[in-house]
Image (cartoon, rainbow over all chains, first blue to last red; front, side):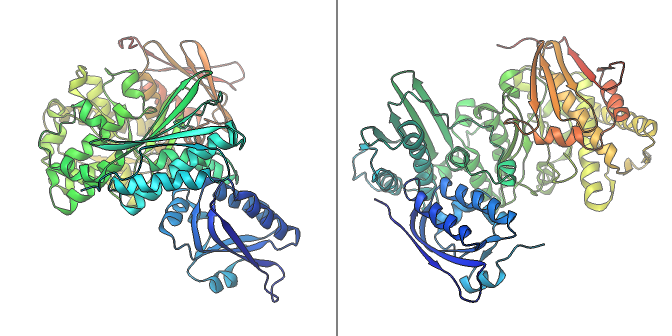
Length: 121
Length: 481
């Protein structure tokens, strides 16, 4: 089956932020794992989330819907979600079709996203 | 040339944990074999994944005892993926009432799949036999046919069968290609096809199918911007659609005509026109355009009033466009024949309306250049006039009533169609944000009344002045089944 891996990095310098490095496939089957990861981060009050998509090969609408839903939750807590390195053309295209990049800031580098990822007033 | 098929054209897959990967693999293989480019392959895969996910998740609840059958059909002009299931649950991917901005705004998590499917393939068809099976067909036109089409000298906008075979995506790409080749005649033709094609093939653009003798219908904004976007604002239960096509900020078709130096006479003599464009600008923000089309082929001849309206709207367009770009507006009006008289009449009417509304307007007929200072209320009146006229045109017999619960801060819009109320309430699926914007903005009763009465409509209010019913009669239009 299509696999998804989620590596979570929690920088020591920012207790409000986490980086998740997504790889593989986000579809209807792998979605629950991603959902759990994101909710766990919110449970830890890490409301600023950087999503590194460098190795993400596919994302379905359910995956994108999850990020939108989570965004709604983190925004209430003053947080934000930023994306970096959406390199796979198919992934970029799918996200673009939903207007993802009008909502989520997109950065070329993870480090840049980490620096910028906070809710804008 | 597409490569020869090397894999089976049909697979039956159990709905187990591997199904989505197998679906994507099957579609990828077949789409690559068919000669689609990387982006289109990716989009085909996305559509297939979304359709299958919906069935497996909502109809089968991930029960591995069920199966899906995928079949691939490579035809001359397109490729079709059919997905068959035996679920009793209907799946309607062709529904087109999706309001993406609202979904995004409220951070909804669900419902994007159907939207994506309709965005990434050229056609979605659905068949169901209750209690037996469902079949979803995802169709994409083949790239290698596009270039052949574009060179086809027989392409005729009234060749409905031909038009039906063209998609907006295809047309857009053909148009782009032709634009690069500096072939303006062909480009214009293609643009016209795209409009006609949309009218005749898109299930929700219903004004023409509902009433083919209507002198013009509303299609949407047509542009050539690379940043194309299809944003549909629909009243889907009734089928009314006002949509913007392709361009959020693209140039209007009329500008393309001008740029391509198509003789003005050809544009302005209605008798010679196959298509009458044009384009009152829409709500202030976003400047959506509307293209009004008229077709001689429809069998409807233009009445004097129709001519007036078109010219009226055409002038509005030109005035509004420049006005909105520059803060003020001026546009030379140099039409010929009857159209000239109609334009003059329209301008006079416009001037009268503006004077009554105390809107500053200065027509300098000696130069044929009207100067208009734009004001928001003025624009809203235009929009309202247009909308009401659309309704007027496309109904028959008793006409249609617009029932506005209140004009300021209205939360709902009710349309009475043959006496049956069709309500569109804020926040519910199918609610048209455009209508909301118009009705709840700064639209005032005074402007509404003038706009309505100016179009031969009637407006009545109840004793408290809280409810308003607007009625337009269209007795000259015949019923179309």
